[in-house]
Length: 364
Image (cartoon, rainbow, N blue to C red; front, top):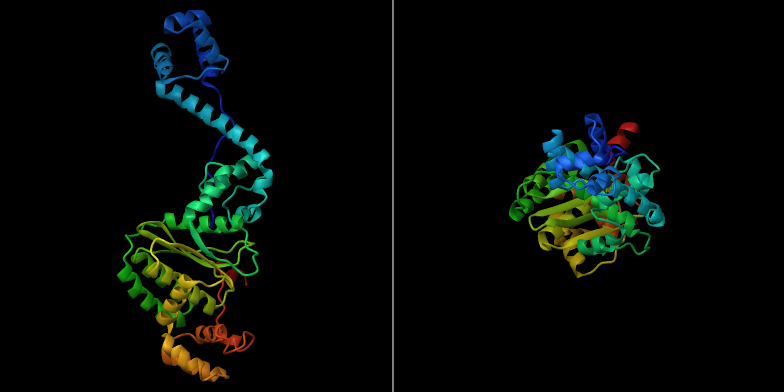
């Protein structure tokens, strides 16, 4: 992801400076101008020295007397006020330097989401915009507003700061999409078609699954994982009519990829309005078990995979034959058998297809 940072000048002038120049050009004293403009000498003096603002009422008087439109005067004042606010934010950023250290600043710079600078004020400005909060003290409120059911990794290595950044990167992508309202029936039908794509190559399945999801009103986005996250995917709602499935391509094998998609699709189909984040080896609960069951049924059928697992397959030929029979990639079948501890995690892994990000594939 890359973003073009809008040009923001690192300076501003108070409208009083311009007023002083106009008065001098006319050859007036401040007292003379005050009488002509129907203003007090004190007000004119304090505007010129920058201690008083140009209000809309004052701007109209300046327009009448000097000819410069009122909106220009109020614009100068607004730019000055915003510049002063940014200076105060930069000062606050220095005080909040320790808070900033908790976030993946280097990674956010590398993906183009934060400016390439060591200026803490500009970094703070970019981070607050990404997180969608007004200041550091609102961080906990933001976490609470997401109301995420987090299936955390048992190792507990996930940083909530890094996780929130990953979620917000995906949310930014999703909000740029123009999609129809969510259609649950069309999405379920689409998932059945997407299942048939599991045997296809990425250049075939990726654009088609994006097209299917987006046509049903589901924002599907792929976002590289950040450090200190073990996240595979997330399913959540941006509003009542906009579900989002976000995937990290963690582990880069097709069994993890497809299981993650169908697991998150299950949350969207079964648990409307609830938000989920799923980490590696996360703890299960009833809601997660429901999503697992839906994904398993959609992919292969629970009775079918149960019956095959009881045969304790020991060869690649057996796995491939069953995969061909049910129309799945053998790597997905192997992953399900490994998850059930029917096949050791160290066996037959060459049946799985490796996936990667486009820039990594190009560089390989």
